Image: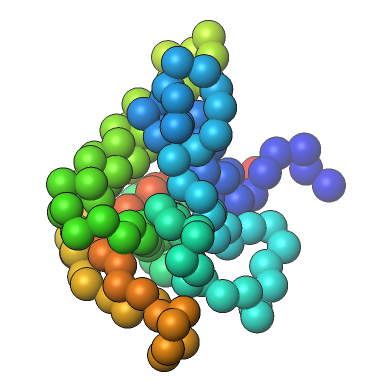
Length: 173
């Protein structure tokens, strides 16, 4: 069994590593404390198909990252490019749109700049060999969350796509 992660696993994990280690996405950026996100919906190595990907009223702000598609294509006679799209969804309850806009900007910065301590190579680039492709479109959508009645509340759902890419030789390692 190879000791390296599959490309898609490394790419998916690098998104979370970047977000979870970016100081601007911490409650107190001066330390390595809690995330600004009260809930993280992770499409992880083990995935529960019955998981709800919608926060409750006490779980906002929240974030999810879900894979959308992989469209491999040839770039040379023995090399393929694996562009892999993910949808990032962020939920906030404040009707001040500048709050989700700030969070989106911080996530964007994390994907391009967040690196392990002592390294200048960002998590995403280290995992895939490339920076993310352009991000977007960004959508801000007023949303009702929860079952009708006293548990239902309004939120702003912000969605955008990010595409990572990696090279893979299908005839070798």
